[in-house]
Picture (spheres, rainbow, N blue to C red):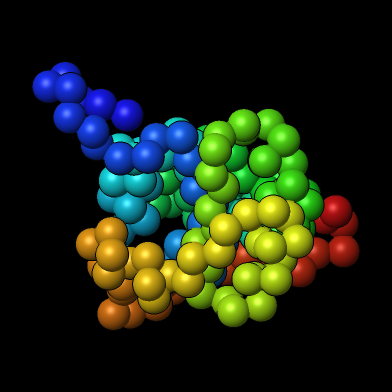
Length: 143
């Protein structure tokens, strides 16, 4: 990718996925997504959690994602995203070491958040988000 001066601004031929728990540890998720858009083609969120949890979080934090898990798990989501977004690289950012195997099985690169954040200049939050009462409720009539 080049800017208007012809200088290279990064490897835009990349799809970047954040596992939801990793995204939740960042101080300003919207700023991280805006930054990532400068050097990626697509950026989104994957999670084992239900779709409404991801949607509620991203709306609350004004994160505009190009893709999300939907009703699938992380591995199936990564496989589907790779099929839909044909970039040269596909990278999963997560703070769960178990996601390394998931990423490899889906033919993605794995990047631990504790390496990605300092390299990209992303700030890790000092405090945890308050739990959303709608995310912790269980309902018998909800799919």
